[in-house]
Length: 173
Ligand code: UDP
Ligand code: MG
Image 1 (tube, rainbow, N blue to C red):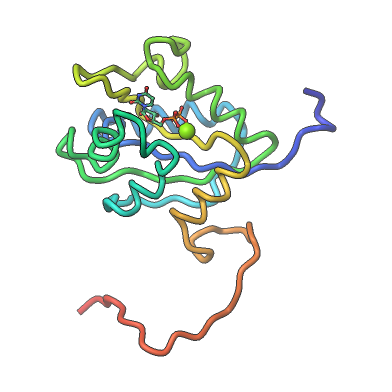
Image 2: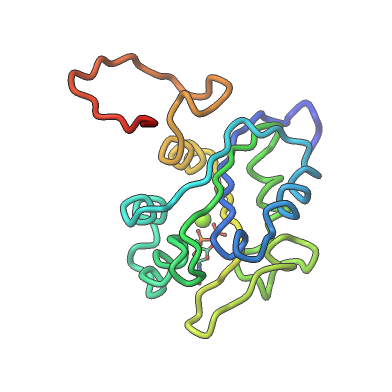
């Protein structure tokens, strides 16, 4: 694609629990840096059942859905955390998907993240190390699901100011 047609996009990347358990965070971020995108948000998250179910809601009727939900929650790896990042830049979605590789790690290009580090479990789940948004509609939905506006260092989507009457916050003692 010519540079003139490149569109600035934002995309959600999640380093899944197998990526963290295998100490691959550094390798993954290094590999993604080939795309010359910028990181505009990052956080380590303990994935609730609610977040997992909402994130993968399009797959809720698939036979592997229950296993997928426990996988993303870290229950297969005794590692109940993931690292969520937002990458931004020209054609970010396609760039990141291509560096991530195909969903099935056995079919993924061996030099892609999933091809190099993924595996298929005996229960048939693709432990493919990272999530990457598939299109613009999904990236917006997912970024808004995983991040609050103030956790992203640039204005990304329209926001609104609301005043909440009773807010309970956890503070350092
Ligand atoms: N997945 C799986 N088996 C399948 C298809 C998907 O275990 O046959 C898992 C895999 O971890 C994948 C996730 O479900 O990354 C989400 O599936 P999707 O089709 O959205 O693939 P992705 O967008 O992650 O490439
Ligand atoms: Mg997907």
